[in-house]
Amino acid sequence: MNPQRIVVVGAGHVGLYAALRLSKKLNRRRAEIVVIDPQPHMTYQPFLPEAAAGNISPRHSVVPLRRELKKCRVVSGEVTKVEHARKTVTIQPIEGPATELSYDHIIVAPGSVSRTLPIPGLSERGIGLKTIGEATYLRNHILDQLDVAAVTPDPELRKAALTFVFVGGGFAGIEALAEMEDVVRDALKYYPELDKNELKFVLVEATNRILPEVGPKMGAYAARELAKRGISLRLDTFLNSCVDGEIVLSDGDTFRAETLVWTAGVKPSPMLDHTDLPRGPKGHVNCLPTLQVADSDGNVLEGAWSAGDSAQVPDLTNPGGWCSPSAQHAVRQARVLADNIRQVVLGGEPKEYKHKYIGSVAGLGLGKGVAHVYGIKVKGWPAWFMHRTYHVSHIPSFHRKARVVADWTLAMLFKRETIALGQLHSPREEFTEVTPPVQRPAERPKVDA
Figure 1 (cartoon, rainbow, N blue to C red):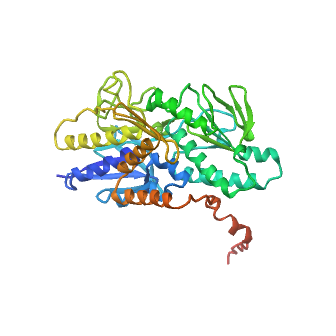
Figure 2 (cartoon, helix red, strand yellow):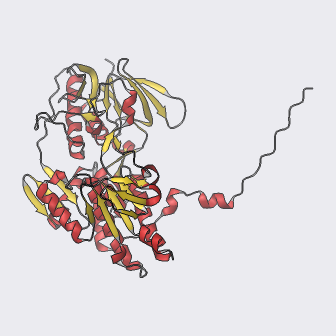
Figure 3 (tube, rainbow, N blue to C red):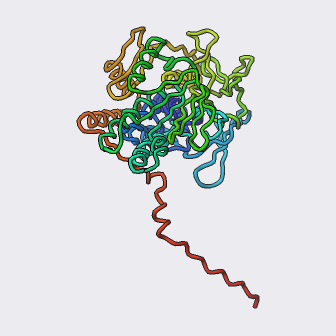
């Protein structure tokens, strides 16, 4: 009997965990598992704020695919088309022509991208926080602004360089804001030219509260703690424009800022536009609680599966609702999805995904946090410790866990590094400046004998 081919599109939380579990549950005589992703690693996104703050090395917040998925075939490329009617995917590798690959089962989990709005200036000025590259860039950019402020004779430029705007009051926005505020205040001790009273951190949130995942009381506590640190919270407020760094808010306030971080939600990957899979009103792949892809009438598309940020999965603990696009759901769905595919391959029936809510934890900078776990509300250092413990327990592999703990331990023993490595973003610039272009001699025309 030929092994069934299981293609995994995307190596995020769902793709990596599902492939890893399938490779342990099904031997190679039963299934061939192919994982396709343009990146050679999975980014553990809850660690991005800490990677931006320098608490964790950027390399330690990503998981190498080939090291973890030793029993899988890893393809470095981008899926440009899924034709489930033919059960084929089209792959554009890093180099070379596109190829088609057939499959028996497919896990469509390309994840999500930043949900942006048509705001003037956003595409030119905004910095996202969805990738390790963006986290590294954010850190270098913010530290560069301190250098700019320390030397410029222009008071308006100085003020703009020391103004940092974060849009979005969810986990990503609040944790990034709190971590970077810690970084800047720590760095100021090396800048005698700057005064901490010149710093201006602004959070812009369209709703009337922050961190809704930890509940209203803990969200209100987090807001009070951030306000005590001098952070301006603009709730029920929208960003109207940011052309040339001129921040215009819906509450009428206008000011200049050289840093604008956008973390206002996510939307399904645009890759789904190139599939023939049924989708919900917001573009997610339509799924049953078994994580099988189904049409609007509930008819299952045999061999098609999805989960995570790109999927619309019914929340059985909240009838009529959908599972939120969180890492907690993605990891748990990946396990159920892998077990269901195994059951189907072996001739069994899939089970429904039902998530028992445990709670949520959020970091508010070094030694500070909030948590709402099993109905218990925790704040301060204990919540921060719970936040770190939870996430280090969920990043794959002992190797990565050990490196992250080592980073944290060293950060406690030594002073925080406040070095900007801005040349990382244009490493060849200096070389090209000192290497003049050489005009190639024109080829001599061929003369017929």
